[in-house]
Length: 267
Image (cartoon, rainbow, N blue to C red; front, top):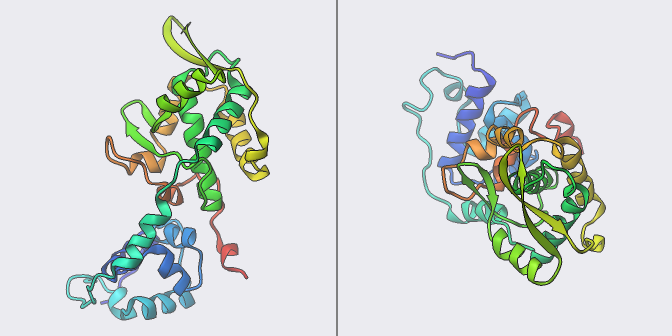
């Protein structure tokens, strides 16, 4: 019996079949001639699938449309379950960032040049400004800004190796660490003692950072922490683990900085 399926149900079924075939989102999207972010939105249920795309999916994933649309889908359907390891490894490699230490230092100096004078910008706010700059850039361009990895900790996403980098910058005379009180609470702040090298931050990168600073640069620590805790990459990660950049493609309004629509298919 055929069923009236919601976008979310269709997306879930496509995701199940793709994973059983051992295909990455990148490989399947390329096979059916749409972008990987579009496929991510389909699987999440945020984007519909037209008839032509569904036909292409049925060929790529080797399923019958009648069975796919039936109420008992997945209970008796035969699907080839051989594991194709290479595509899965490729998807993992795409999401693994490589820290660009010089870029990270200059992005940090750029953010501090803009915000260090604001009383709200202590360590907690600084961590979130870095996080949203990195993840927003990746969602928009599918490339890493600083390549920093972020771990899910109780008080928010925290960039790894930050203490080591900051201590090195302090030793090199580029930063100063100070302790202050903000609303009667102890706060660690960083004062830039050097100018950022803007030659290593291109126009697109600067635009993304500026938008983050314009939106969140005046937020107190509690507000920006709460906001980061409702971002999909944070929510979908386990406590203590590294947050995958690919989760940025599953964001919804108001977090998503990229418009996912049919225009992505026009070429």
